[in-house]
Length: 287
Image (cartoon, rainbow, N blue to C red; front, side, top):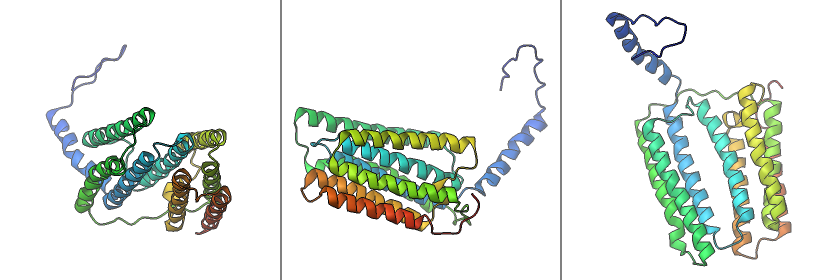
């Protein structure tokens, strides 16, 4: 490899053949030591869950076409943004790296473009007044699930045994953040039921700014908890139920007359209370 010249500095002496070979031989040891800290099986399982979640979001988005989509779209994007933040923190706790390999990048790029194309086609059909058949609305999600899910199953078959995993302590900051997230879910159910564009835009920007600010602060300081890495099954169950309630409120409000504002508020309060309860599950350690 040619060295890039640095102004005012003499070029470094090239290593001898023996030294260069020693560096090359060390690569295998470095890779092996790194693999000891990567839980491939849990990462493969998470990849399978991500495939299901992504396919579900895309399918729900396809079923929202033909209606006033401003409020549902904003809520879906907000919910998906929260999921991306939490799943990234969980993946990092398994030893995953934010950068993907060349093959993974190409796969994610191809299916990402397909998802964007499906959404754009749906928007165009809605503008043109064309009714999309029910079966056609499932195609993008099924295709995405087959691509990402198949890769996750392959990785799961090749993965070694699960490594011991110790969760970080559930601090007071993590408790407060969990309870606040439940409040956001509750407000989201109310906003979707009322179809109030102004409140949906305000809540959308609050969530997006919160996620962006939380990510920056988490990298700048170690005092903020990474909820995705700290949460255990009670918190993840509450998140799944809260997401299901928010999506159910959205779909019933768009396609039926069954979803009333009082019912949506009741469901939202229930989700907020559930998050408040699970926020106090687990031992507390530190501030």
